[in-house]
Image (cartoon, rainbow, N blue to C red; front, side):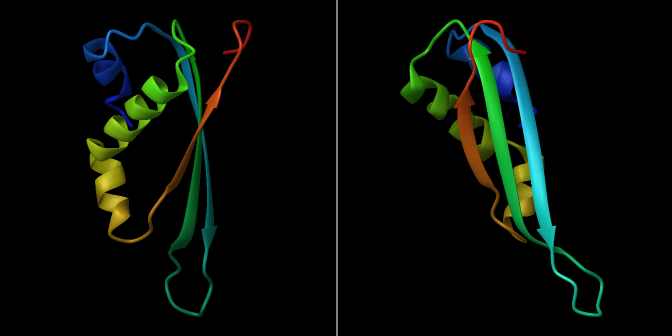
Length: 89
């Protein structure tokens, strides 16, 4: 999601803050372990409260992220948007 600020600029969104919380579950089976789930919670503080537009921002950032595209072959991240109020982040 490293492209999120660049994509926000193209969408004319003024980001005030972005916080990502990533949690993963690894499998243990006696072999080198790997993640079986990844949950990504994204909190955004922006000049817009338009959830549809912010979800589009997240979708585009995920689609254009090298890390997300690499991980997708191993485990599909579950990405969720959480809007934050004006006093957060």
